[in-house]
Image (tube, rainbow, N blue to C red; front, side):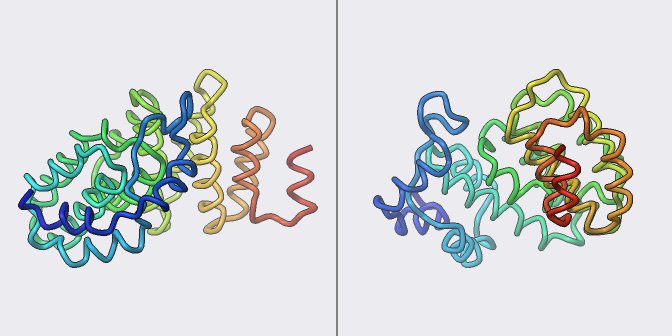
Length: 237
């Protein structure tokens, strides 16, 4: 394997840590990460490798890494893609290629950390000045919970730019889905609502006053996490 990113990641594997990560990311039979395999490498180490290797990593290399059976290798590919995207600020063609690559490989973005560490840095940033229908389509019709989560979590970048509308609108999409809503989608929606509330707390309260009675409990609990103990108790009751 001539890909430096691949070889550098493989050199850092830790079998003992791999057991812990496999348990943490729910890889048992019937769990959301069923069958995934781990090298035992923590995110800061992967980021350091990416920092060293991203500039000489080709899209062919990324293709190899994103399709790999090891979770950390796929994460390394995604974090490298983020770096390529960020460093191509003045080259729209390279950024477009990054986005096309990302969307073509969502089958391999198959756990919550892979989603959360990549989607808003890529799709969220790309769509800041573009039509955002793509995210609504993913949230509503994504073929996996991971694609649906991408639709929600990508709005984090909009929140960071003071734009709250899409987060609330996509949250409405999830509330309209047939129940029960997967726990990882409840958490994602609640998390983004909480982040929206940090920018405009009253708007979150106004939205909750309409929806709290029909919200799944986990979603509600995540959304109100930053409220006072007394207020949280009131909403949960």
